[in-house]
Image (cartoon, rainbow, N blue to C red; front, side, top):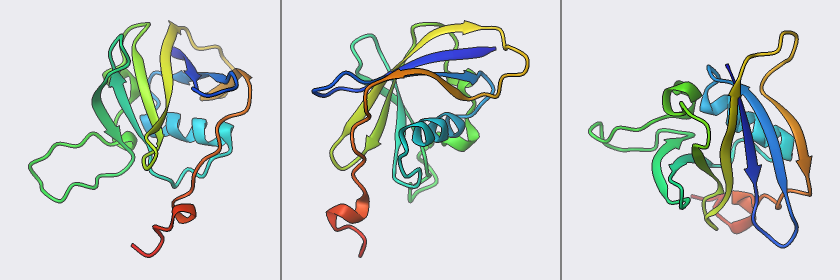
Length: 145
């Protein structure tokens, strides 16, 4: 199945992108598609969060496992398929792309439909506006940590 998402940014200028992904793609595949489309450095920290109807953060899907103990369960983007956590239309995600400023995009699962033969997924299908600038870790002086 194909998931159609709308990613929306907040800011002064309107900004959105629509993405289509296979339900069997991982959250890392989706992360990389977003990063590529927005021309961001995909090595910067990012996380997805399941969100409720009020856009409140729920379960986190991490880019990396940064826990120091073996007792804390961590959900990693690379190991988690979209269909494992997203099963119905209108589900929401927050995509935190700037941890130090807590900036995020709002993502909604618009529809679930059949795959179209010959189409390469994931892909951006529509968009408007320029994305917010990505703040790089080295730009804020954390390179010596």
